[in-house]
Length: 546
Ligand SMILES: O=P(O)(O)OC[C@H]1O[C@H](O)[C@H](O)[C@@H](O)[C@@H]1O
Image (tube, rainbow, N blue to C red; front, side, top):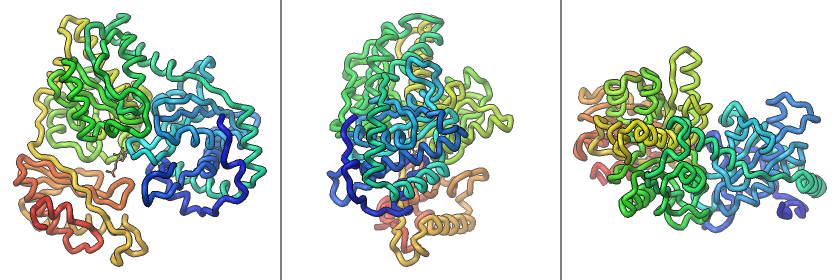
């Protein structure tokens, strides 16, 4: 392990609970880990990360009702961000200081880290009692953060708040001696394994099994991967090649935390354009793209048609509903009306449109199963997706495995090669001619906001919108809606809701034409225009009122 800079610290700057709570991002921790962006001060320092490590240890000991002699084991992995190793070493010191064992996995994916809590194999020092992924997903290079797992899944919002509150107390009790002591302990207990071997071999086995135990079920397929210089490069080498696929033309597989080619994010237009181009240039059968830490993915068929957002959900729903007829597909709130029709009328399933947030969607699917409604797939337009058969693990790589299974089994049953089998699966999906997302910022410093509570202010905006559409006969509020205000009209719909993390009201509009979308935009603008703390400039520009 690298030497610590924190251990030489004499006095750390005082930080209170609020400083720590600012690092919470829903069910993740995220902050600025290194300098390099003007105006963005580092707040995820090494001592802060060390305190978070100790706090997670305390949380885990309580959760597992472990006694101190048990030495719980925690696996730690990271994506390609340049601050990864510093944070890994700091959080390891925090765990070691609290008497826990830790195992470094090095470059890994978020789903692999969760998987390490389920794997039963002492050769890989598994199962881990807890697991930490160091990642900030698709955010810029200077950010980083942590996701935590136990075998019960990813930690939720309340757990993260608890850990950050504990971390604030721990941080303020650090002394030069205690920091030195945890560094010594960490050096003594350092262990490293290449867990990605275990994880990728599970993925390979899954595809072989689905094809009827053929060793190279993807022989003859040409599949290109775009990892955007994130952690997903392993998929070409360690999954596709052993299965027999040709992967030439794959791009940006090398780890580079400056992300020099494009943002690793299947929701990003430039990223999707890059993989589409790679498919067409290489005349490949299929393209696969991942986000930085591989919990999100998307694909591209041989004609360059993107399987992302609603189309990815439609494709996954078609695959899952073949295996589990009638099952419920849980999705996020910004999915299209056409997707509902497709899932319910064409595939014979039920579409349960829930809230935004991958954890919300997964937890809802688990809840439905617990009350007797069968659900096998929880998936977001963002490319996050989890299947019941895969322990509800939020795993972009496993979504792609399901697609590969389909290719391999179609070929094995003589239905031909290529990815047309996938394209055919979503035939009949109606897509809106026009779709847009506008993000309306709430100015937290505006005098209209009482004590800066943007949530309350956002709720007031939503209430006003609800009132206003009630008096417009061309607009109809969705009878069932779990988040924000969803309204149909002019052949389309809009949804205004509070962002999960930011002082923002995202507005999604889908309509048969730009003109219809503008009419829906006008309806929203008319309702919210008097809210001085809401920045409606993007909406005004869209409807041509600026
Ligand atoms: O509410 P928003 O700001 O649009 O963000 C919502 C999104 O945030 C993160 O990216 C989560 O990983 C997604 O699961 C979630 O859907």
